[in-house]
Length: 369
Ligand SMILES: NC(=O)c1ccc[n+]([C@@H]2O[C@H](COP(=O)([O-])OP(=O)(O)OC[C@H]3O[C@@H](n4cnc5c(N)ncnc54)[C@H](O)[C@@H]3O)[C@@H](O)[C@H]2O)c1
Image (cartoon, rainbow, N blue to C red; front, side, top):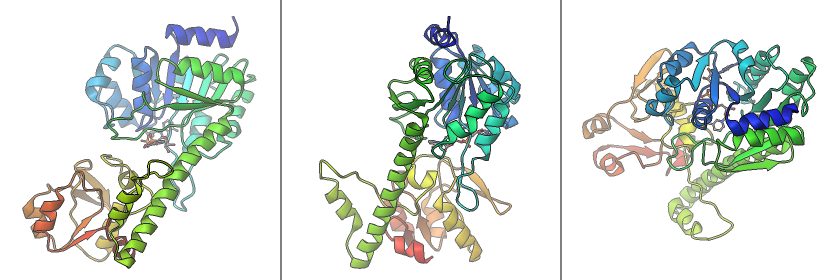
């Protein structure tokens, strides 16, 4: 039997073993879906706390309940290690390591490079590697083809390589890992066939494209589309503010157009999981942190409320979320609203607060701050 047919048969029988590198917001939900679909899953993470927590059946990710995770761990379907060499047991390895922005706002691909490094000496004949991390077009071939070449494996014949961008939206109650269509691009047609077979039991809809570059650019287009439109609507909010027009009235009216328009709403910044993703406990790139830092730098005594972020550390001090009570609001000289209003009693804020800066309404105030 060819290596390709062998892997497809293992996918159909669910006897394939999956490795998942990086068990964060993306990797843990993926590992759970793989295990729930019937595969045995070996997670690999460099963070000991993540390894111990998941092996104890405790989830550190909001979208994955411990009630869902624990039975999969207890049944031996999912186990996590901090030893990269265990990945040799896997037939397919999905890579979900972070690609944060560096201090200079360039994508930091050191984690992806570390994952490629971890696979050197591990990758073997009959293995599949699927990169899921958000990255620049060309990464899959550039960083992962050499992993196979160094092991004297011909991609598409002895081993298989693909890119499949993650689209998770943490906190979204409707769209989650399984029911969000999954784009796939293989280095060869055989790579695509193998990954399609492996992911068919895991995702409701797969969207094959012709190459890893097409899949990488699909993700780039999606992220650029979001950023450009958030930037556009924020500019529109500033224009409306200057003209004395209610930006929300304008947006709601535009949103009645049944074609050619997609509604985006103003926020305090372009990026960040709190900024454009609601109901998320992911603080990275949050403009709320910028606001807090600016206020702290001015010597302000800052408290905050966020039901998803009980505490966080800033400049060696730990800030803790305070309950959103009339007393807490009254005790503040100024309340800055850096979120949509869905989780906030906005009428109570208006009643109790002496001053409100709502960064969703008064973006120019935020810019001036
Ligand atoms: N979080 C989202 O909303 C989201 C959405 C779509 C795409 N993505 C993309 O998915 C990728 C993963 O993001 P995330 O939010 O899950 O990251 P994360 O920070 O939540 O999790 C990453 C995990 O990888 C582990 N890790 C880091 N380096 C490692 C290494 N060398 N080997 C093994 N484990 C390692 C970390 O310990 C951590 O547990 C990124 O490229 C991100 O841009 C994220």
